[in-house]
Image (tube, rainbow, N blue to C red; front, top):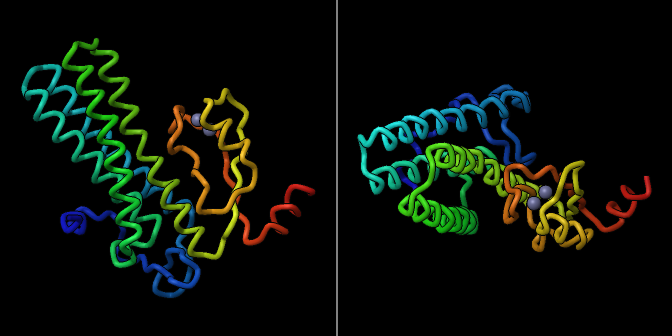
Length: 220
Ligand SMILES: [Zn+2]
Ligand SMILES: [Zn+2]
């Protein structure tokens, strides 16, 4: 199903995934800087934004049908989501069955929301709303970063996690997740996913190997 992603893969050949540290490094063993990784995330996002903006223009100018727009827009979204996820978990070579399931679920969920959006467009939305809501879908690739990051934490031996509310208004979902306190990592809902604020979420997340570590960090 994901065979097409290899050709669209934005990760440079010079990046090697270190299975021990679960981080990208160069051949000489030097770690790829967070800055360079962030640049790749931005590149994935910008590519998506450019492509989807062109699609919106075409739809507005009636150069394509809504169905054509829907298929292409979502395909771009899916590709970005997959690329982000792979960049976070160590590339296609390290994608195991469990991850594919998570990825599939994320994509499916997104498609459900997206179909509702398309239905709204059918009923009639203003150009402004069309552009605004499309842009939010582009930005939602950030939730793929969070999901990938969570997997990465699990694999590097973190067993507990906590969500802290940021200085901002919070949606009821974020408040609920925060109220759970420190939870087992399998119960943890990563920031920017499964909440109303999504990519606007200002929460931060903390990971701990043991409960003692969690307690210690709160007492500091
Ligand atoms: Zn929220
Ligand atoms: Zn939040």
